[in-house]
Length: 164
Image (cartoon, rainbow, N blue to C red):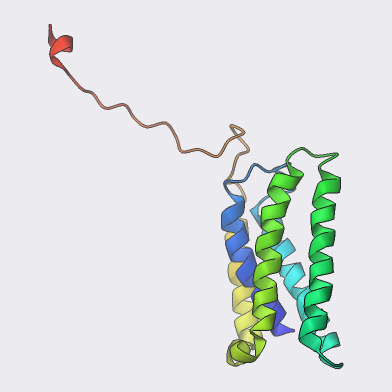
């Protein structure tokens, strides 16, 4: 289960940063903290699913099949939400691809990452993901509707035409 949480935390770190330039359907609900918490919950679900499936035959294949169904459900939810909240698909699909992809990769690499899969590492990773999500909660497109840098200060230039 710790591998799922670590994978969810890694997915949270990446998806929080990617969510910043995306136009959120609702800044109060779909902010960086929400994205981080969602990624951690997906990681927890993957960890629980992995524990349940390792008791049977061919757990990797069964995990990938069930994970693909969960991913399809997440994409379907984004499309369903798009009927009520504009930009749900353009925001939700890239985030879902990142989160489900990173978590699935971490679960498939579990035998190789086992030395790092302790509760201490999981707690540090969760804290880092939560801290980043919380620290960037006010960043994004809420003020202007666009993610953009502040306008550049115009340089004072003089030309021969300006001097005459």
